[in-house]
Image (cartoon, rainbow, N blue to C red; front, side, top):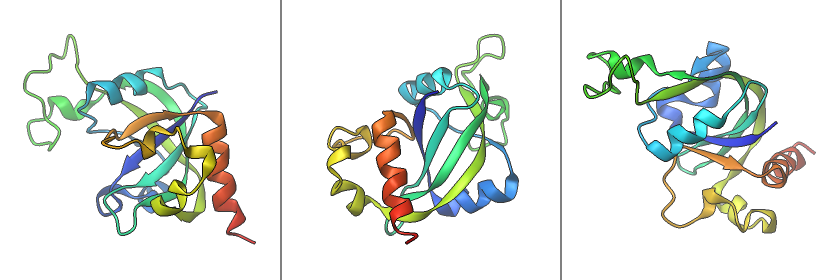
Length: 153
């Protein structure tokens, strides 16, 4: 089982929206590196659900991958924000994975994450990193969940 981080803006699609939807295609990824990471995802993998472009940004929950990568249908929909006229239905450029909520976590802000020694090498904290999908090591994933769970007490 692999572990991941998925970023979304909470005013566009936040963790509570995922809970309400029960499962959702992680659509709109239009970066080749992020797409390639999604192609590595497998059913049963877990992901930290991260609220980006929020005040403050940070961790909101854990999601699970319930279906592996398949073509993102929004790339073919001219009415979609994520439409890509250059994507060929016979050779799609963009994929999505289907995610479901696993559990909400007490919020852990980006500033708190930056203070965690376990995350010193984490891609999320790397300067200039804007990827919306990225791998986490198991230790990074566990440290984030532990930091959130420690807030419950």
